[in-house]
Length: 405
Image (cartoon, rainbow, N blue to C red; front, side):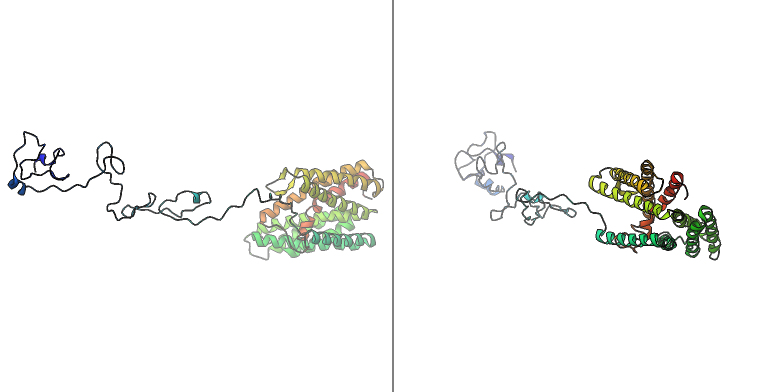
């Protein structure tokens, strides 16, 4: 087809959009150099398509080139699609697990997703400010206080009636503590420390310390360790070194340290020395709890015991020193208040270290309490943790200050 068929728009003649020849001759406005057309030539020429009229300006027209943009519908009866909806002809890869928050619901969703209406957010001005969370002791205080009072009555009654009864109380506490410790070692670590020689040797250690003093306690300790070594030989050798090491440790940690309480009791004023020992340890723990719970902010040993604070340690020292001064002045014969200050400071330090030591053991075992025998307290070992390492400290200072009695 000749390029002149797509020539300039006509001035007059047939309807707009058709630029072919007519019966009158060539189309008006044709260039002078073009050929002459007649009706016969028009029949041999393919007619041009009729292009619909478009507005001169606005709408979908391009102002610069006068060509219609292809952004509208192809047919007039089609419904325009929202600009944010994806056409079916386009490749579509849905997002992985889209999630909408309260803020996202206010925006236009993509991929044609229709989120549900979010629930109205509460008005912060009409809601009261949340109260600060109260600190919790983490235990049943009523049960703990009841058990503590009951144990105190048993201890005081046995101390001031017959001393030998209190020796029996110590021996029973040692045997139960050994049972709890060996059970936890076996359950959590697979360590089988022999309980029978430990229990018999532990009770013998306490009695020997009361009757024969430090010499008897050391001899009983050595014999108990030997009994552990021999008893374990009746089982297969796998794990022998591990089991006997744990057994010797248990013999030293529980019955041997408890023997110093029996040695204090053997003095003429032994019941008063034991009361001083128990009272200072309890006061130290109480002061640490009271001050730490109220003012504690700086952790003492967060990797071992996150609940202990430096402020609590200061409270333990202050309470124990005050109680020590009073006990040495009014309970212990030939004692003075300044000796009580030293004794109280030493008790606070040893009690705290003992508590941290058992916390380290329980963290290694992955447990919170050694047992459940005492409601509100845990097990016997959970009450002996501060007492056991404090006993030799108090015994030694009493001997230095006022003699062995």
